[in-house]
Image 1 (cartoon, rainbow, N blue to C red):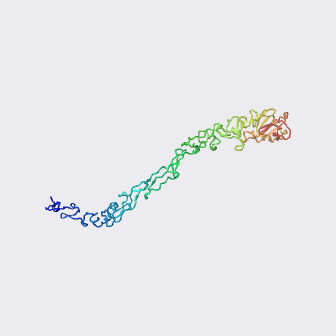
Image 2: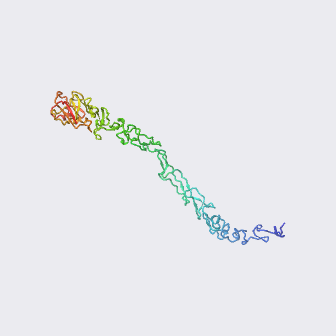
Image 3: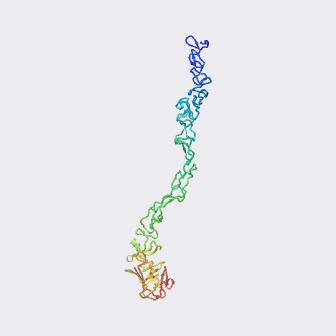
Length: 464
């Protein structure tokens, strides 16, 4: 046991000593086998020192970069608590450090924490901010989040999500999507697309196009434009204008739509394929001026009643006329040679009792009687042959008569002749005035009574 003179260890030379090495001494100093009390010059951090031979209550303040517990331990008076080394400045700002490991510089020199690091967890990424979760490399500044980083999610479809700009730590102010931006696309031709109003977060309620809104334009003159019903999403099925109905705006006139094509028909099969008063002649819709033009359009046309329109686009409406399609080449208007009749308005006619004939350019009606009544002979106002101008015929019979060679009804000249003969009818002569058959002494007939005496004509003659 080695305890002579307070010794603890044998030195190998037969002596008992207090220490063999510095670690055997509380002061960390062992000289010649004895523990030496701590001093501020022993080159060992001992006693109350915070670093070797400095700091603490007994030694001078430490130089920059030396360990410290408080500012009293440092010659500079600065010992940043988070760093634990003496510093040239208080170094207490955001993202500052006196540690070389933090700054890449020198211990004891305050500098900004290296870019992209955050050893002290000073820059946590907070919700709704653009903090980049690290320091920027500049003292007092955290690094901003990467440009485009979402910092506030959209609350609804018309709310815009906010993103960082790469420089500011603050998230941009909450904003809405622009007014008019589509937030719900149309589900069909009759569903309205909804757009943001620039104020609300939510998209407006789903709405339909108004009833009557055109969702499909007409593809042709015989195609209907489809319209929405105000309830369904989809445009109604495409439909053509039905067979026999007029085209859009009359674009197909004189043809009616056929119900099978969007384009205009180019031919007809029957009169119902044509816009009235047009008729179907030889597969062509036309509005004939007289019977002659009907026969020219359809050489096989039979005698009978047809609609004709002598003045075309003039103010007079079309009317039904009898067409004789067989006599002398056919095409005679309101002249029925088969039955010896001159057809008048209101179902009246002149019956040519002794025959209705034509010779060259002349049509003769022998012994004319109104409506086939022997007691109603045609009134004649001049008995001396001076009535060649034939105004009576021109004014009241001619507008309803005509021949195939004329572009309008009527002939070049009309005559009413008297060559002598039966005068026994007395007061039974009749006029045809404005669609009526009246007695010669009726005021309507007075215009033709020029005071030359009454007589019964043998015939009237139409010359063309």
